Image (cartoon, rainbow, N blue to C red; front, top):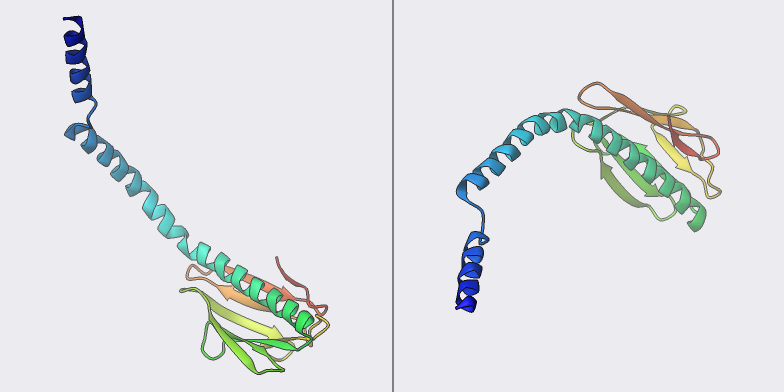
Length: 158
């Protein structure tokens, strides 16, 4: 008799633990919806800033990689901005004429690239550059950022 009572109680407990009620699910979905209503506009407004930061890191990384390849391969490398189209740049191994084209994230424009009187930076086989300079970037909100290349070939941001 006692074992039947225990079995009956355990069946009731199992029935109560099978899942969530419809009301519980609706409450959770409502809370998620309210949270998203506040979070999404904030995230969307920050998207241009994230893209600007991403573009800066992309150019910074590619310039540093070009310098490193120039040193390790013993060849001159160039990076030409706004080529073949606006907001693009080309990386070229000047010894082999191998060219790679890169595009910046949507909403980012190159406001200027000045390396002496050219829009091209050339890394020599020893890691230095022919002419130092900068690349300027702007997002759709008007915020700007820059990447600088010194005469010794050091690539930095401010």
